[in-house]
Image 1 (tube, rainbow, N blue to C red):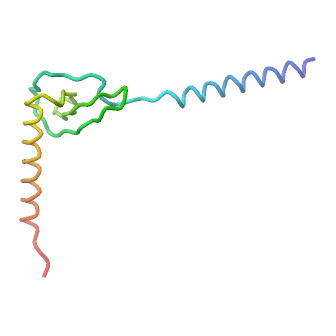
Image 2 (image 1 turned 120 degrees about the vertical axis):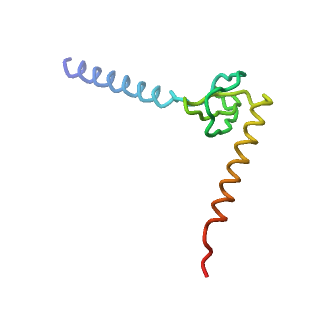
Image 3 (image 1 turned 90 degrees about the vertical axis):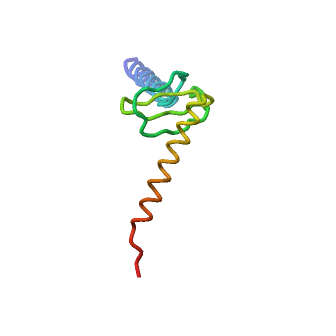
Length: 105
């Protein structure tokens, strides 16, 4: 009788652990924008990335500022203009680097 209780206890513990592992593997932590702002950003913007919609994440432009990341609505006019500005600066920096790199003989 005591052996049967031990086996049932072990089986119950094993089943509980299995459920916890299965549940934990289904929980996904998302580091993405789930909400967006339409406000202009006042902090200096140092970069950006585009986030596609994949629930719970929403389609957004994530600006990297000196104060952290800001999720902005991708259809805002100022967002489009800021992306153009950042891309022009990136291209200018890349071209300046290529122009100063000495060519090998």
